[in-house]
View 1: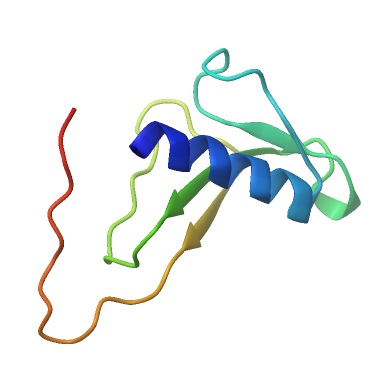
View 2: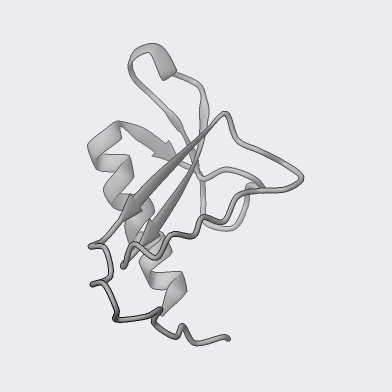
Length: 87
């Protein structure tokens, strides 16, 4: 399910990159803020793609300071694009 992978990706990124996450679905345009280093206080939108398909969804109206994209393995040559369910 796409929602579950999104929440899981945010949780992983939060732990690895010291991101304090916002409460789910309460903040438009970003998922959290960095808590350490040069980026401390900067907003970040986290996206996790289970497969590297060559696409990236970005905000068109309210952009965060940074995007952080986690991606799985590249699709094998000739395998074509996988079909994603629409909800």
